[in-house]
Length: 408
Ligand SMILES: Nc1nc2c(c(=O)[nH]1)N[C@H]1C(S)=C(S)[C@@H](COP(=O)(O)OP(=O)(O)OC[C@H]3O[C@@H](n4cnc5c(N)ncnc54)[C@H](O)[C@@H]3O)O[C@H]1N2
Ligand code: MOO
Image (cartoon, rainbow, N blue to C red; front, side, top):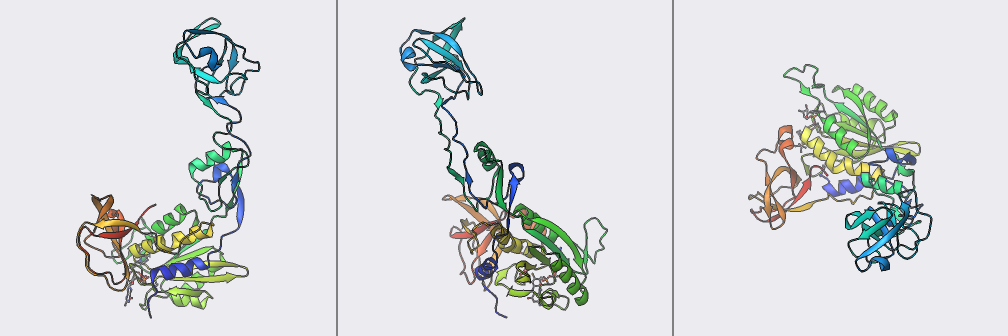
């Protein structure tokens, strides 16, 4: 069967990824969620002209030339403004964030004054507007501060709070189910024999999914048996995950039962086998539950392949389900080769590589010597994936190349 190009598989996957329903969440629970409605300020901030420093509010004209001694007629603290008017020759003690008294147009910082009783000697000439934060200087009421599709960062939550917005409309978190397959798999810490393999894929894939905003459920391990695989797939589909991720059993061996089991349970496969290394056996399909659908992503069992496929396909799918606009291309970045590399064959190749320096503003990248897709220690040592396009010719040290970050 012909292998599908990497970006075409991504295009097909994203084509079915309509955003999930929305919900309201309080700001405290909103980090990492994706906005479904804009954040519109309900307030002008600052709400009035305020002092940026601790000192004395003055009329600049009274303290424009020195010496100048003014009479202190009151105090303005944050939350407790001075109510009176400032007449010629007066000053008001003021603190950071406090409203400027009517008539004052400058602040002299405390360090530039000498206070004696009701009098304050000004030791640094005042200029109009000095140390004043203007009303609306940060943002105005009605201003759109954050737009739909934006993934909320810590600082966005403070911004929304300061705009007097207490909860936000975001897309529901995608629910992801992880289904592992393989007679050989044993959980970490459960005393695996040397003929067995320790279940590792759900940890990397699950962590990538969580970091992309999903709620993750470990749905267990299936044996390499057709009836059991069909039954496992059937109950995982019935659980109604937004995304069901299988690992293993994706290739062509006698024990690779996932594709036929998915098809037998009503999953329509849109992708099966991609021109990708590692990750050739990748499959993707959808399963209809009435009006809603489950996306089904079948990852290869080799741990590096599963991780790379999750980065390339699962993470963008989860973002798209949360309303993020995701370009249907692998997001490559420029770099420079630290060593010569060979011509590539027909599969787009994602080589585990290290950044070993910098040249002309680009990271210098060297592929690790072993590229076996079972080797997690090599993946852990890598800084990035060095990406080689299908049929790319041999390239020399110093030439530009493309990389994919392993973390964002
Ligand atoms: N004749 C062919 N053989 C293979 C082909 C092919 O085209 N023709 N493709 C190869 C490629 S590429 C890959 S990648 C692997 C992956 O195939 P499967 O998805 O069927 O993976 P398994 O056979 O189930 O397992 C492969 C390997 O990974 C280990 N594994 C599986 N699940 C996990 C897990 N959850 N955690 C940790 N390790 C896991 C499993 O024990 C095997 O060692 O197929 C090639 N073969
Ligand atoms: O392409 Mo497989 O994914 O060799 O590891």
